Length: 102
Ligand code: FES
Image 1 (cartoon, rainbow, N blue to C red):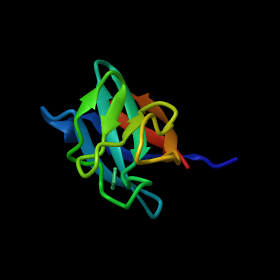
Image 2 (image 1 turned 45 degrees about the vertical axis):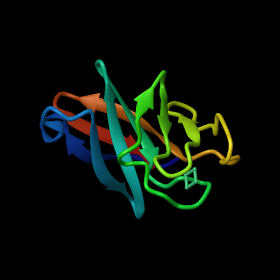
Image 3 (image 1 turned 180 degrees about the horizontal axis):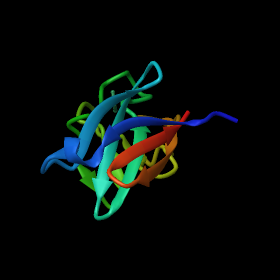
Image 4 (image 1 turned 30 degrees about the vertical axis):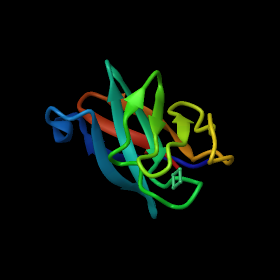
Protein backbone atom coordinates (compact mmCIF):
# COMPACT_ATOMS: atom_id res chain seq x y z
CA UNK A 1 0.00 0.00 0.00
CA UNK A 2 1.56 3.35 -1.01
CA UNK A 3 2.18 5.89 1.70
CA UNK A 4 1.04 9.45 2.10
CA UNK A 5 3.65 12.00 1.10
CA UNK A 6 3.70 15.68 1.99
CA UNK A 7 3.09 17.54 -1.27
CA UNK A 8 2.28 21.13 -0.37
CA UNK A 9 0.85 23.38 2.29
CA UNK A 10 -2.42 25.28 2.36
CA UNK A 11 -0.55 28.60 2.37
CA UNK A 12 0.82 27.87 -1.10
CA UNK A 13 -2.65 28.27 -2.60
CA UNK A 14 -2.73 31.95 -1.72
CA UNK A 15 -6.10 33.11 -2.99
CA UNK A 16 -6.16 30.60 -5.86
CA UNK A 17 -8.41 27.57 -6.05
CA UNK A 18 -5.72 25.33 -7.54
CA UNK A 19 -2.05 24.54 -7.21
CA UNK A 20 0.24 22.79 -9.70
CA UNK A 21 2.37 20.08 -8.12
CA UNK A 22 4.09 16.83 -8.92
CA UNK A 23 2.90 13.68 -7.23
CA UNK A 24 5.80 11.34 -7.78
CA UNK A 25 6.53 11.83 -11.48
CA UNK A 26 2.96 12.75 -12.32
CA UNK A 27 2.01 16.37 -13.02
CA UNK A 28 -1.00 17.01 -10.84
CA UNK A 29 -3.37 19.67 -9.65
CA UNK A 30 -4.50 20.23 -6.12
CA UNK A 31 -7.93 21.82 -6.17
CA UNK A 32 -9.59 23.56 -3.27
CA UNK A 33 -13.35 23.52 -3.18
CA UNK A 34 -14.75 25.08 -0.03
CA UNK A 35 -12.81 23.25 2.73
CA UNK A 36 -11.98 20.20 0.67
CA UNK A 37 -8.72 19.53 -1.19
CA UNK A 38 -8.82 17.20 -4.18
CA UNK A 39 -5.89 15.90 -6.22
CA UNK A 40 -6.07 14.97 -9.90
CA UNK A 41 -3.65 14.10 -12.64
CA UNK A 42 -3.06 17.23 -14.72
CA UNK A 43 -3.18 15.54 -18.12
CA UNK A 44 -6.30 15.17 -20.24
CA UNK A 45 -6.72 11.59 -21.42
CA UNK A 46 -8.04 12.75 -24.77
CA UNK A 47 -4.90 14.37 -26.17
CA UNK A 48 -2.57 15.26 -23.33
CA UNK A 49 -3.63 18.86 -22.67
CA UNK A 50 -2.90 20.10 -19.16
CA UNK A 51 -6.06 20.80 -17.21
CA UNK A 52 -4.42 23.57 -15.18
CA UNK A 53 -6.51 26.35 -16.69
CA UNK A 54 -9.72 24.35 -16.98
CA UNK A 55 -12.99 25.71 -15.61
CA UNK A 56 -14.26 23.96 -12.52
CA UNK A 57 -18.00 23.55 -12.34
CA UNK A 58 -20.35 21.14 -10.60
CA UNK A 59 -17.54 19.01 -9.21
CA UNK A 60 -15.84 18.58 -12.57
CA UNK A 61 -12.97 20.17 -14.48
CA UNK A 62 -13.33 21.05 -18.13
CA UNK A 63 -10.41 20.50 -20.48
CA UNK A 64 -9.64 23.87 -22.06
CA UNK A 65 -8.76 22.32 -25.43
CA UNK A 66 -11.79 20.32 -26.62
CA UNK A 67 -14.13 20.47 -23.65
CA UNK A 68 -13.97 17.02 -22.09
CA UNK A 69 -15.13 17.04 -18.46
CA UNK A 70 -13.69 14.94 -15.66
CA UNK A 71 -15.21 14.23 -12.26
CA UNK A 72 -12.84 15.69 -9.65
CA UNK A 73 -13.43 12.88 -7.15
CA UNK A 74 -13.50 9.79 -9.33
CA UNK A 75 -11.60 11.06 -12.38
CA UNK A 76 -14.31 9.65 -14.63
CA UNK A 77 -14.60 11.15 -18.11
CA UNK A 78 -18.09 12.67 -18.15
CA UNK A 79 -18.30 13.60 -21.81
CA UNK A 80 -16.62 13.22 -25.16
CA UNK A 81 -14.10 13.51 -26.60
CA UNK A 82 -12.40 11.86 -23.59
CA UNK A 83 -13.37 8.30 -22.77
CA UNK A 84 -10.73 7.29 -20.24
CA UNK A 85 -10.58 8.58 -16.66
CA UNK A 86 -7.82 10.75 -15.26
CA UNK A 87 -6.02 9.52 -12.16
CA UNK A 88 -7.17 10.89 -8.82
CA UNK A 89 -5.34 10.71 -5.51
CA UNK A 90 -6.38 10.32 -1.91
CA UNK A 91 -5.66 13.50 0.06
CA UNK A 92 -5.26 14.17 3.76
CA UNK A 93 -4.83 17.61 5.28
CA UNK A 94 -2.96 17.59 8.57
CA UNK A 95 -2.79 21.07 10.03
CA UNK A 96 -1.51 23.25 7.19
CA UNK A 97 0.16 20.40 5.31
CA UNK A 98 -1.35 18.50 2.40
CA UNK A 99 -0.49 14.83 2.07
CA UNK A 100 -1.30 12.68 -0.95
CA UNK A 101 -1.20 8.91 -1.21
CA UNK A 102 0.49 7.57 -4.30
S1 FES B 1 -7.12 17.36 -25.14
FE1 FES B 1 -8.62 17.49 -23.57
S2 FES B 1 -10.50 17.27 -24.61
FE2 FES B 1 -9.01 17.08 -26.17
